[in-house]
Length: 311
Length: 281
Image (cartoon, rainbow over the protein chains, first blue to last red):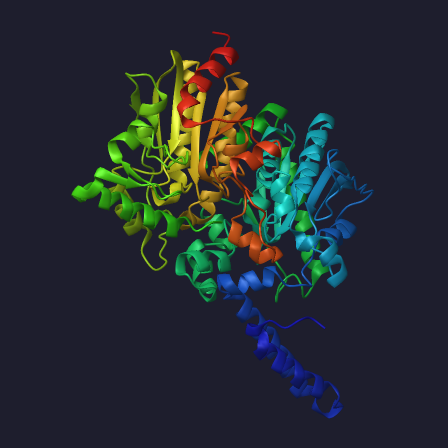
């Protein structure tokens, strides 16, 4: 049973009706009509999602996550642990894997799927050692010529005493630098939440893709609202103002393409969503594999310098 | 993200008041409360002679303190304002207008070229008085301009940081300044030129998590607040009181994130010495 979001209540009401009709074989025609109506309603709701509603979809507990995506799209994944300095951080996972015939370095945030694993993975909020592990793996990929694929899904880097004392800011800065130094193709996908510096540290890539209902922002809508509106309840306004949806970001040139989600969001048909994701990653890598190592780095540098409007 | 807004508001009103009223003869130390003769306080580099508190200073004052006489400003472009058409309780263009009127500056980072104790350098200063020093496209643009001016002159880039973080009114485009400035740092590294960061109070958020932490050398002024997450965010996440001295310059020194904590009076000498050594001059 999929967890119902507030704005999906009309669909949930129809679901209840459909369940009732299903139990009564005499009402097959009514059932068919109700099912068609439900399909239209769901499609209409998802076509018109507000940025705040998209935020809720992006945070949906049943949304495809790193480990589910690995299982469906990648083979021979060998997770590698640790930053070689302090610890292993399981909010970021990474290691080499096979993807449609090629060896790649796969790195990403994993939020966890139930209470226990969410706590273990700190809800996808990585600490410095997570970013240092990511940087280590990106440097390794660069040495061995493996394309880098990252899957971004984090509320943000962890804000805590231990993270600060081990240099959270430095670790993020270094990971971003590692993205920009690599002379291999790099493709990043925002699969759920792209939370600020904690996201960009894994997403300074040649091609940045986003799932249709994912979000990517400099600060959470709640955080922005509490600072600029002095009221966290204005999160929906902040989500609009910051332009955090995939559609807005494509328009701003921050992302390169949008991966369409099944009707009703990726959480309703994860396998379908993940298959589409695979095709998009494959196409992006195909395009980049035509470039030389020097061109790949130059492409990435030019792309990000352009955001400072400096040629 | 810390509330640069609250703080910058206080700063701005403070600044205007100081200019327009005759009672700016005296300055009250924000740390110990001592009443200081403003002229003497400024002659003392805006450091309280009583308690050693290093007051936040404006970009022009910083250039004057660090650079030898004869320095010149480097023009910074003003990229298009308000790329998102952003409005919260106020329109972003109105906030920019107010900040420009209050500071007389185009945006939060200014550049100058000149010499530090006889050694050529390009210097960038992030001014906290301009919307909390926040990093948007204009700051990213100034940073890249400064790094490239240093490369063109074959000299180091010395950057004074001060910011609450990214400029939320520019949304994702402010976040994109993190990789953009990182590319400029790589260009300096490729040219084998020193990039020296001087962290001043306060430096937090996306600024710390990008160009403030990628220097060849990290210097900090005493007691400067330096961190990734704001204290309130941390406290509300972990529901613990923060330890004494947390996220202060000395704490970062102890934890290996800063090379040296240098008093303002020794800053120009330290920078000059370092540049001389690293440039083998």
